[in-house]
Amino acid sequence: QVQLAESGGGLVQPGGSLRLSCAASEDIFSSATMGWYRQAPGKQRELVSSVSRWGLTRYSDSVKGRFSISRDNTKNTVSLQMNSLKPEDTAVYYCAKKIGNTKPPMYDYWGQGTQVTVSS
Image (cartoon, rainbow, N blue to C red; front, side, top):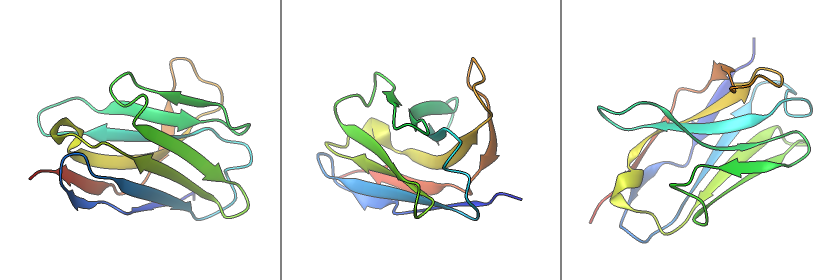
């Protein structure tokens, strides 16, 4: 069974940066699109960014220009570099694996989540 483990969350001041990382328990990155979701209290879960097996990236409008997703298929990791963080970025961030080429995108494996808090 695939397991995903996020790391890198924490408390940061507005305008600061954090880098989230996600490690997979087996080699799924060579064939799967990977994504980062977030969920803030009282809000729906939001797909923040994704990266395909070929490196094609997508971002939600709320993070475009500030966040950058990347993957390393040799290390089975996917990362999310978050810059110019805002208080509204505060949420639990989840790494997830997409099911094939589903449209709308569907994800079947999830990490446990890592808390990101942006506050002064």
